[in-house]
Figure 1: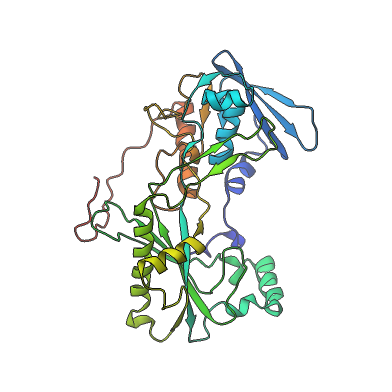
Figure 2: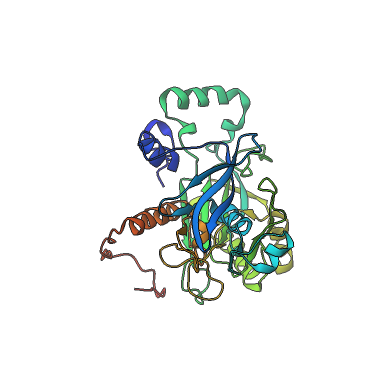
Length: 368
């Protein structure tokens, strides 16, 4: 994965790729430091939005000529719907919120990717360990700031892969990212030596959680239950992930570089020991989704074009509408959802289905 081809060594965010280009349009107004309170309804039709701006306690209001598009993400979108009177009536009545529409799936079906690190000593001085030393960081920062090059121009996740751990899975159920340094995601707990690590986790956990209001106050955090590792499949996949990672790391090609296993440590072998490691070290990959899921069953929130069931003039357009988490990171797919919904809103026909050939590994089942 080439991370160094972007201009000035900067990742192309949606703000840079979309908003910056549209900022000058007369039909676009951008409000920053704005906290959405609720959607305004006239009967079953969404007609506007109220929000709080900055430190103000006086709500601002905008009305919609056509539709209201809710794009607040898998955590905030269901909160806004619930504060607006759309959701499970039992929950709404707890906070004296008038029920606009009974939609019990709002906030349910929460999914995420969970992952962990397996860390190894590197016997050759080729890792990014020197970049963690403060005396090297001014040079790295200057190289990126003035030239857009060097170590600072990449997030260093430049190798990865997907593996089907067992024949029973019809998809690659394990994802890998390789990092040429041994450190936590947030930069803490760095190993004080040359090292490298594999980030590994399952792709389609059967575990489901929820996002629910705790208050009508838009500043109040919701109750979030991810419900990680609530199925035996989760535990089996993570055990498999550790054992497969060890098999990969013990290949002859890595003999020159692979030192001792730092974490979890080679003494961690039994199912119970692996489970304990997972319990203490697995962490989110920051991919929440599914809380306003697309579909037509009783727990579905939106239809195939993002329109909220039972209401008019309201769509949800973000990762919350995924009925099931995808096999991979959510960023590009969520951008694609925005593109597809924009086409649907404007009545544009989709491009024809791709007929490109693709690789099929062995006897892996493939949906064609």
